[in-house]
Image (cartoon, rainbow, N blue to C red; front, side, top):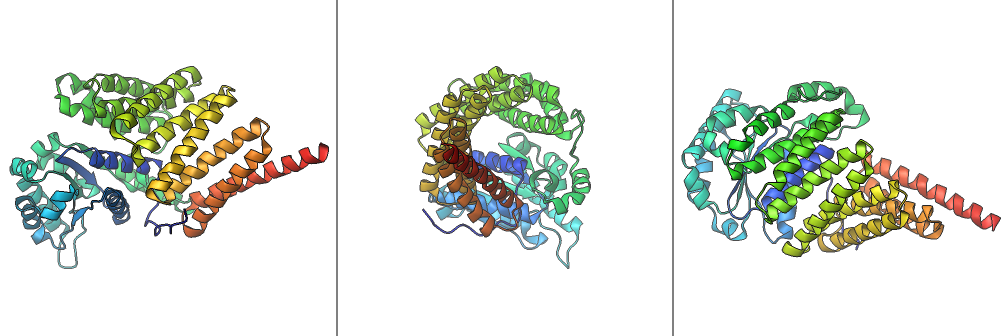
Length: 439
């Protein structure tokens, strides 16, 4: 399939940014009726990526996204409340998410204070009419505020905040992949966002502190609030793991898994929560050198992913979740010297990723996934002595990475991937030539 690649995105998301996007996507796609999401970002590029990706995924489901972007501060409250009182019928019928961007910077004739007042007024009205909002809007509602509006949102709309399904803080230092030329901005950006960027003690990270606060309240919170605790736990794990505080990451991972297992038995959301928690347990176990523990965690996560596919069918998301779990299982098998097990896991992961491309087309994400799987398949083939199979896999992987690098020259990851794969391919070709010469 050689359908055109999409236009380049305004910013390239980091691994943490991709995880945040996947969280938003899962909450929207799995929502059964009304769901409330708070998204905090002052970066128009980040907001644009999330909005347009959501629009693309909805169109795959024969739906769309209803976007509200008030141009002036004095129109915000009325525009929002009009959408609550009289939702547009076509979007209701499609279960299209309602995307409300009120994170704008002030215009020439406006002040920051006017926009802050407008945001708080609109949010206060929504809080007052929360039952009307839930009754009239039978689909997800995503509210986008500036990065520094978290406290104001929590204090202005305490009732809405308590029933939110997800809140994401998208600070540029956390979610945008910086090129080497941009690293000089990392420290100042991280300081503004309040996040750590290094060190071996992550206990002072605001995200970790929030997890600890919610964890203490866990016995008293309602069942529907437990998922917010889980989400905070996953984010805290990522912060601790990224900072190199592996002891703290291990504690968070095991506690989060315990909480996830305590959810409603057999529920679809519980299955996925346990699966996601197991992935993190596997990640930290692998980092600590406990390959057996990592193998067990990844294996159980894979089993849960297969069960989810059986229950909801083969969607692009469920297939990708299984493919990622298979990749992790294959990585552990390779580290333990089980080349046959690694080959089987990598091969199945590659098959699933090809099926995703057939379903949704050639996007940067689906193509990159295929190229990564091909590299792993090729590496195992080489280790097993199948140099011809290794060369074929790496040729295809290099070709895909080359296409991505050509279409998206500003995305340094694709250029690095192409260079890495080309070097690996050259090594295989030389090894095959040497074998033929000696044979």
